[in-house]
Figure (cartoon, rainbow, N blue to C red):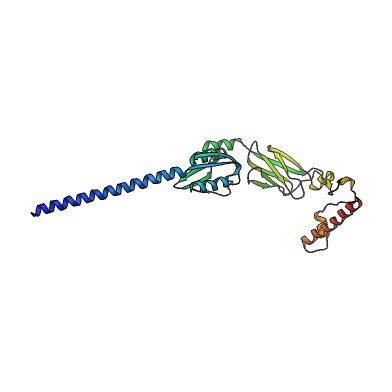
Length: 272
């Protein structure tokens, strides 16, 4: 056999082997791709039905059924928020879209990870909210004495925004929603919720005043506090301070034992 024939036969064999190898690789790649697509399509289906389920429960179910991890930022996404869900073999994208869209939340799916974030307002929405907001000034007084109450905490309901009234009971709160509600709270006074107005005077009631109409149940009968003179008392800060003890819990325990003794006497007189 001539040299050129040897070269030609060797080249032909090399080409044939190369073609076979390329075809095998292509078949392997296509098979792997189809398997991944099929597995991904199956994994993204979700079946879950529950009333008043928390977002955290939904996220846990997504991870169990799809293998997708769900991440969210604590403090901005309330994972305890209750939602009603009812899905059967629903695509993951549809589940997230229908569940989160009504709660000012958005999401992104990156590879096999779902990232849930608080929906960012557009520039127009931000401007609109600013124009609709109002600045509030007010004064907080004791309803029974008309004296100012200092250091009252004023919180915008549904948010973490808050201010504290000054020593004269005056407060100022800027950029509040026109339809919002303010919560006023202070030790010794009943917490109040008041609709927002530009100028406010809030009259707070002392917590001890509510005890006048309290009905006390002894387990055998119900007794009006007003009809049990001498049988009941109110534990005040002054009482605690006057108790001869250096430990606050010991002071409270002493008062508790006294009141328990009084209650036992009432039960005894009642024939219990």
